[in-house]
Length: 522
Image (cartoon, rainbow, N blue to C red; front, side, top):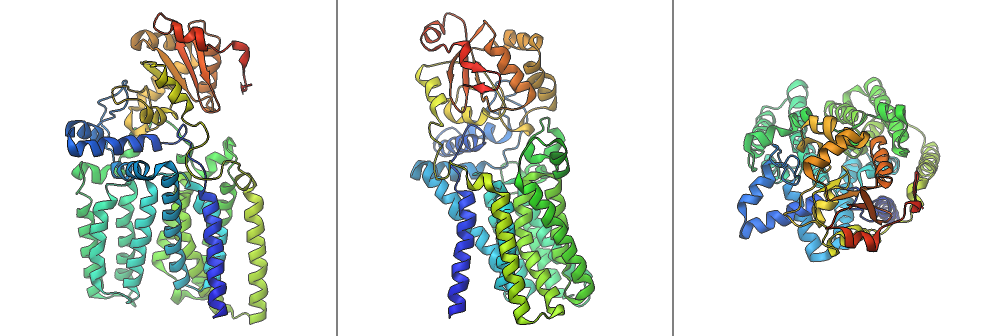
């Protein structure tokens, strides 16, 4: 009984530790949440009236005036509906709470799978090590739904493999596939999960079971077909294989660990943690292979190496990798330790030492996050101030904006107001970023040409855009006599063109040049 209570307390502490990382207030100016909310708003309105607009939203760029008809598959529209309804019912604080509870549920499922594959102690130690890495993707994004489906797929497939549930449970996979394909692009990896279990069943003689092979093959085929049940049909089902072909803008989350370490532009403690965890994973497979080969799991090997490689190649895959490694590390070390047979006293001492080392490392390595002042739920203080200023004064476009703040504008502007760009690289041709967006901020000639073409009336920019071209552009506009800064806060800066339409606003709100410095706002 005492042991059970102790385990419950430890699990609560682990959940609280993870929850602490998740409890960041929302910043709409740097995330794509605003666009997801607008997607949800349009999707809900389509139910009652404007189906044509919804169809455009699903298959074209839609939100920009520069490339409104550019072909784009909106693969996450369903997530937008869920987020929108939550905000309408419970506000942004309710959305934050939902995100935290939802994420903790996913963690709990993976933790229980880790425990089932080892014991509570190994599962807890693995979780303690991995929680900061799991929390890498802690913003509110559609991928949180993918993590749940990964957990459910793995739960069903593992229990079926162990003979703990009947083949009827496999029928749930295609039904979940229909939902998954309309929520997030990771759906395609659901087939990889089924395929890994099917492959092991085929190639490992000791496991070969014709009924299981047949049932898993059927589940694989039906789940693949379920991915066709979304607005773009076969094209949408194959979209994950093509999304990076037209990806013209380099963003941090899509960069490799090696690249980020080399350029050193971000201070992310999880880069170091990944460089520790991935080698530990590889060593665990090697030790298991030589010490207890009968227990070597081909499934876990495929999952670990595949998701580990994905994480190394793109920061955005850290969380996905970490959830699966939570299960795999616990399993591998459980089977390794069974061959070593430490004495109980030694085992307890090792566990205590490991606990202290891992906990200490987690605290030291994540000091910035632990000391981060904007913990809580809902929006950051005055996060909507720039948009409220823009709307209250009835400022009109065309507006020139930077990449990151596009979704913020999409959320706040009326549907008829379009943006110059937003944070969907795949929704714009590569040439747009390479030949227009970036060069326009670097040189005056192209900027002036674009200004003549679009007749910009306003510039809405995040001064936290630390790209060289973004900073250069802001410095030039502050010193440009044709433009007047009328609003600046901790999130954004707004310039208006000096013309008759804006004259009254400029006279009242213009910010003097000496308010600004090259390093930011005084």
